[in-house]
Image (cartoon, rainbow, N blue to C red; front, side, top):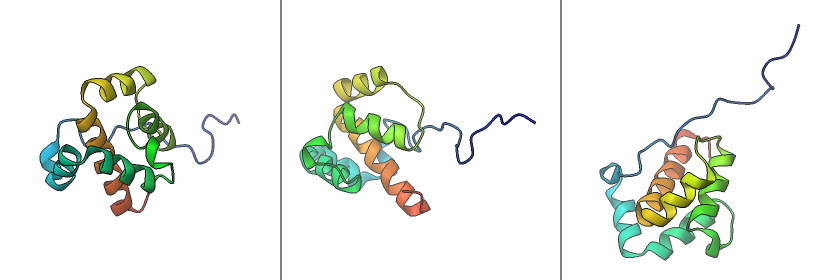
Length: 104
């Protein structure tokens, strides 16, 4: 009998909220809008990374890889360049939801 799936692997998923679903967590949205660098430091702290790494494409890519979220480096780059605050807020919302679910 052939093994078709690796043990412990899980299927790719999407972020738990959309890029523009700011009403899902107005507090995070305000935090990102008024103190974007602080939100980046909060994300980096959550992920045990350097505070300087909390913003942009690299942290988004690391997070996607860690939680097997669909996407690409190109997509991460475009989100981080075109909608940096929205992309960072989406990442923070996803982290918070995973913490609530006990899977972070």
